[in-house]
Amino acid sequence: DAKTTQPNSMESNEEEPVHLPCNHSTISGTDYIHWYRQLPSQGPEYVIHGLTSNVNNRMASLAIAEDRKSSTLILHRATLRDAAVYYCILRGYNFNKFYFGSGTKLNVKP
Amino acid sequence: DTAVSQTPKYLVTQMGNDKSIKCEQNLGHDTMYWYKQDSKKFLKIMFSYNNKELIINETVPNRFSPKSPDKAHLNLHINSLELGDSAVYFCASSQEIEASGGADEQFFGPGTRLTVL
Image (cartoon, rainbow over all chains, first blue to last red; front, top):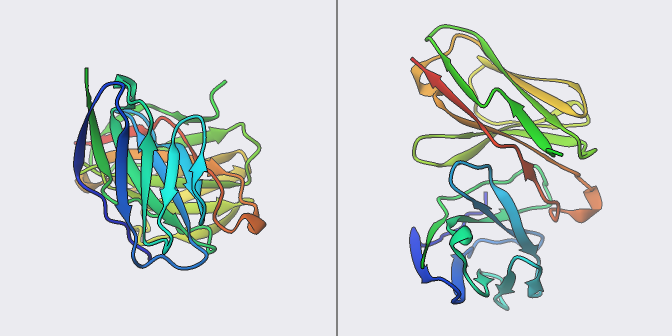
């Protein structure tokens, strides 16, 4: 099973951009890169996903390295409500394999 | 409208009891999942059902048995509860489109906190 490596925690100031890194050196060619986040006392929620090209949506942007061995989730302006654990996950064509790592706990300071 | 709902939200019970957690999704998805989140916050997939058929059964004790009466429901029944079963259990669903090859989004329920005394 493909694994991801993320920093345990990061800190950001409110209204500043945040770059959350993820290493996935064992990624295979058909694996999608997914990001989910889990706010305190809630279930995980989808943030964004991509395959090869950078992606943008209303929540965040996903920058994928050219060799796909790493990616970065970008929150353009962090708010206090963005404080959560962010998980980087690889999702393969065997679509039922979906493993969460330990994630990055993001703390946003006012 | 709640997309994925679970009942109960909290469940406190004694060791050795049998209990069930219910999950319902109103998204029209054909795949549902159960996850366990332990005290260290690690999320692990337990089961996956696609169109009422068991797809994934990770290394989970036989005391855990998922039941899917229809596509919108996936209940988790636990026999002979043990202290180590204490955790938060999340139900999730997704629309597995085979052609997506991994691009689907999973929707999670709010979780059920199970405490075994």
